[in-house]
Each structure stands twice: as structure tokens, then as C-alpha cells.
Image (cartoon, rainbow, N blue to C red; front, side, top):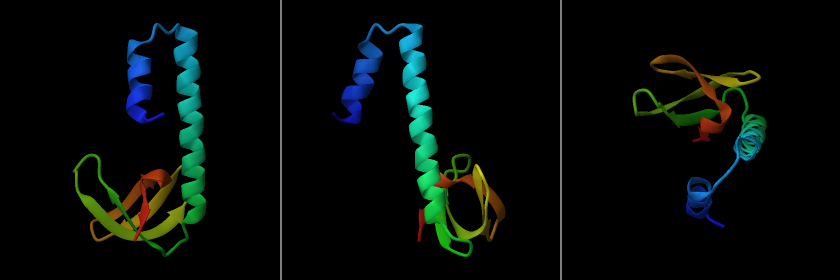
Amino acid sequence: MDIGTINSAIIRGTWSNDDLTSMIDAVKYARARLTERSKYALKVGQAVRFTSTKRGITVQGTVNKIAIKYVTVATPQGLWKVPANMLEAV
């Protein structure tokens, strides 16, 4: 099943509030596992890049610190706190 089919089923479905809450919880759980896997793949000093959602630019830097929710990335523009699942190794 592809993402388009899933999105269409959610939009066209007649879901109860409990059903939608269950779907949201499943997505949050999957996102947390993705972040965890991404975080364990990173090392301090590793070169990474990410796309800034506010500025719409791709930023490159090096991992400075790995915390519980965010990874601090040192860039020429300064330090950025970025969710681990947004980072891509260079």
C-alpha cells in the first residue's frame, strides 16, 4: 500500500474520534522510533545536512552534541538544534 492510498482512505473514511486518535498515536510512535534510529546512526563530529523549514535552504554542518530530542549542529551560520530524523549524513 502506498502513501497516496493511505491518505485517501483517511480522508474518505468515516472514522470515529477514537479511530483517529489511535492513528495519530501510531504515527507518533513510528516517528519516535525513526528519530531514535537516526540518532544512533550519528556521531559527534560527523558531517550532516538538513533543510531549514523556516528559510527553505539546505544547511551543512557537523554534529556538535546529541541530546534526547535534538541534535546540535555547528554551521557557518551558528548552532542549530535539529530533530535527528531531519539530518542526512554527507
